Length: 265
Image 1 (cartoon, rainbow, N blue to C red):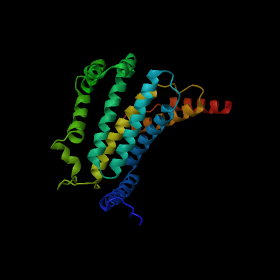
Image 2: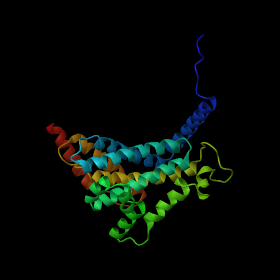
Image 3: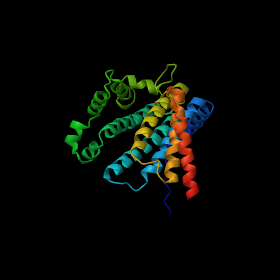
Image 4: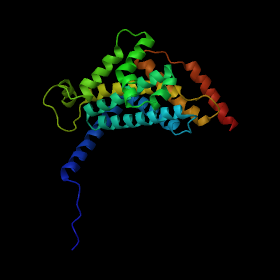
């Protein structure tokens, strides 16, 4: 007698079906809102940029280290977006704290490239002493002469409202208008918007730092094209939402150079 084939528990099937319905509502809400769609386009452009450069042959171990951290950010952003659109706002925000930690770490590497090797070769004790998140933020604030402690405040918010089990963290598990904590996914447009805005800001920073570790304006048309798209999308986004001027003259020069490279191929 053939044994009956076991199946996934029905409750897990129903949970997945519920997540899919919420995802459809989330996508519809994003596509109906220009700002949200701009945020998603930025996130995708950064992920596409990382995907291209993280797969190239590294010049050395330091660059490979950046590529591996880039792969982690790619996974973080993809996972956070999936959690967000399926209605898990607290989990999406918790994942973004990892992005923030890597962005700060890249900030230190950008200012002191020798730290890449030191970080890679450090043991657990040294890494905790030198590269603990608070130590990285302290270095960056001192280097940039920032006295307000905005990095620490932003990190604390992600800890309290997303990563750590706190009373404040239940905010991302209940509807915006109030009510009981929801066990499982739920659709809430204001929560989705808030988390997506944070995701876009972190993605923009991640893309800027990651890009700085690679030569992108040489003779490789594919590399320049991948870099240029991220640069344009990020620049236009930053101009619109952060008030930072977008260097269109530089973009035109790079587009002309890209056409020249393609013509020589």
